[in-house]
Image 1 (cartoon, one colour):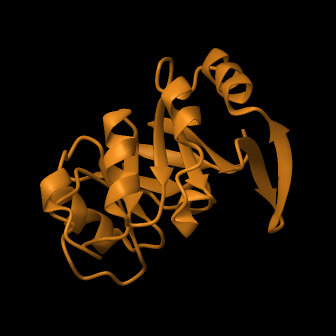
Image 2 (cartoon, helix red, strand yellow; image 1 turned 60 degrees about the horizontal axis):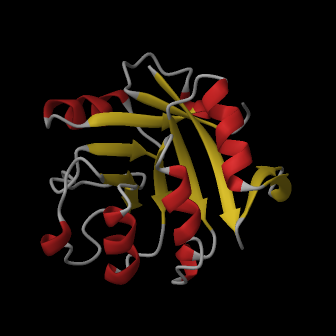
Image 3 (cartoon, one colour; image 1 turned 180 degrees about the horizontal axis):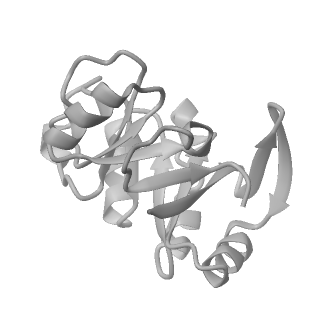
Length: 168
């Protein structure tokens, strides 16, 4: 099972979130190099600028993707998604919110599945299940999806591909 640290990026700085409060950690390249040394292979990044539609951190991802894999949560805007994909970032999006047909690269697309979602997330290879039942996990597994969960869900007796860690 892949362990995936959760980081927040805002204005070219890395933060963690503790009790709903952002705590500054440092510069993205420095933090990522430390995490790589600890053996992490993939980072889950919530880009607080890109979620609001601003692509101010693209140069950060250009540097990160030279030595570590990243998946970035952003607004469902074609201009941001296409630039992230050019940089070989995995892009985390809600299911089928808009037409991304021209940008499909299933290896780089990750679906953040909300609780009770009844669709199949067919445009995506990997799914992050926000809240799930064993039946829901089995349904996505049958569809050939790799399942990612948050560490708070680890008590579930499920085989998953990855776990997003709040603390690392």
